[in-house]
Length: 289
Image (cartoon, rainbow, N blue to C red):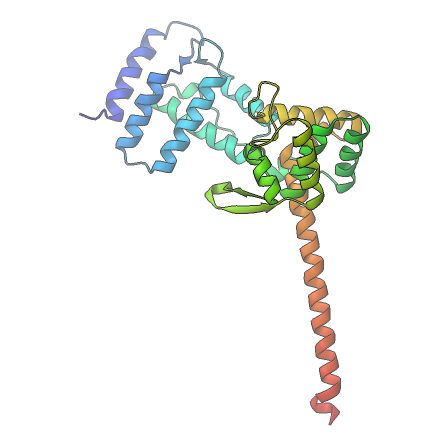
């Protein structure tokens, strides 16, 4: 018989009573508890995508908790700050918090929930200017930090997200394009010719004949935290505010740069069309008879 929400909540309520005498005893997040919560959600006919997101958010908190795996007052607030520093988008952080708040409600410990939502990304993150971006590249080249130079250039000229970094393989760079799936939609990102050559030269000199180009010394894909850290370190040397030193700000620079170019092109098209119409009016306008 499938477990019902009422049955599981009754069990957790009994556990809560046993800890009621302790001061801020907290509630342990366990793998078994996660599975119980997921089972109930599945029995409530949640869609597959929602269930996967629930599991991802709960497992992420579990992995980030201290050894005792206990949620106490302030735990989710500190976790939120950690995710912000690691460069997660506010929408992602808010979703993770919502999932864990739902779990805390489920186990009868709403006192440990964190209700405040982060502001939208445009409010939270400052804008990196093109001058600052170029200064980052110049500084990286001046101090001989080729890898961070390539990372800054890659995020700033393709719109790639840090989650898709392991898709930057020798094979993809040779082809000159990357196939990514942001928000579950297929998208092809073009690699500029100059960057393509620089990436292949870097891969060849470091012995990467195939597969991902950006790896740690242990041969594993670079984490979001590591990428943001080395870019922030470059910001200090380049005299660029550290809060602008992350892949998301570089991606927004790419997007705003393209938007500005597209606006200029649209204006030129409109002006050319207007001149064409004016010329035609002069030649065959009704008043010109």
